[in-house]
Length: 336
Ligand SMILES: [Mg+2]
Image (tube, rainbow, N blue to C red):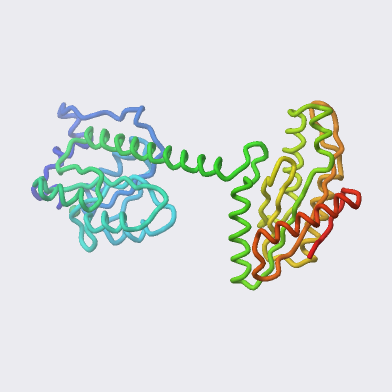
């Protein structure tokens, strides 16, 4: 509906100069509203769209304005879309209600806050709008200050949502990673091994595992104390993580023992990754606040024959590691 038909521009309370000159009080742009948030505005009325766009831009929002529901939907199907949406209810083609439904049906990892603009103020209509997935609504004609306040409320909801997602991600990371080294935890390593073995079976590809143990690590703790021991563990972990291929997994299996899971791995690949790991740790002393400490690793490796259970594989890698230790340390033994 255009501002000329049943809607008087003065009622939009958008501060266009001639209105202000008439002494009509209009809310001023408040610097506390400054934001770099992007808002999607879907509104078929060209004048209202322009007015809305200019007001939102004055408040510091980046605005993407589209003229109908179809255009909005095209945009919303792309991976990077705004989280704050102002949708007109009445639009040709896909209307605001249908857009709400489609947005809510589409799974996204981030929530989108929808403010529905409507000329309808019947309670039943409003319930219909909210049931379709709108978070809030404004009945035209509305006060521009109210629009600002409702957008700020929407932003608060979005930022709470972001905090929740972040907290969930942090918890997931803590649950699956070792706090000292940042490597995968022992439990997560077992899960990763099981899923890599399954993937290997489906892809007819072998999976390799390396059991890596720091040689004589107990001496470091006994001689320099546990804080220095921790520093050595962190640096050794970093070197191991850099020596494997970018798509391999490394976990902390035990105190000074690490497990590397190598997907799509031949025996030659396994041997070469293992040698890289061994050299990365041995090539230069690890510097700590207590001084430089020479460190080496012993490595036992195996490549899975199809369908070998993960525990058998771990046990075979452990035997190979034992052989590497027994035959003098700082070496790689590949078992079968
Ligand atoms: Mg409309």
